[in-house]
Amino acid sequence: MTGSGTAVFLSELGRALPAIAEGLLVTLEATGLGAALALLVAFALGLAARSRLLPVRGAARFAVELLRGTSLYVQLFWLFFALPMLGFRLEPMACGVLAFGLNYGAYGAEVVRGSIAAVPAAQTEAAIALGMGPGLRLRRIVLPQAYALMVPPFKNLLIQLLKATPLLSLVTVADLTFRIDQLRAATGGTAAAYLLLLLLYFCVAALLGAGMNALERRAQARLGVVGGDA
Image (cartoon, rainbow, N blue to C red; front, side):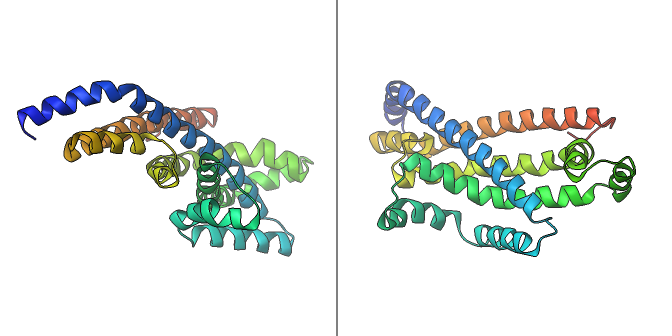
């Protein structure tokens, strides 16, 4: 980029900062809401996949494989373009949050299922010997130990969800990518605009990662684990 081109880009960037800030807030909102929904889906499907009832277990496994085995891109477009043909119309942001929640929730379900399975059987047997029912065992014995195992893979899924949010710009949501692309179109500074976008996503991902690392250390400390890798 030439000196004059840099000056134009910086001048336009100054004017675009409020819009970029709004786009960043939209991206954070989509990430937070999508992650919250994904967490609910993960626990619902993950626990159902361990059910003793074959129909429940089978339905959960089918849902997980369907959601993991199809493209998030296609799922988002189906919700935005095809669902209205069936008489259900969602706002673009709602389509994005629902797509993120279902897709990453399916991956999270495997994390929940595997983490619970990794809790030593002796812990459950001891709880049974103390007369604890299934619900109490799960809440007081199994989940506190499984939670510490879930945090690292949940951290990875959260970062992946953040990196998927640029798809929102394809369904008319004015997210961070949408605003930066407007800046690129206005200035012609493609390299500078997308470098800025890379740095902004990196900063957000670093903050989210630091928060999840803190959760992991706290979970390990509650279990008496010292010197975790987080």
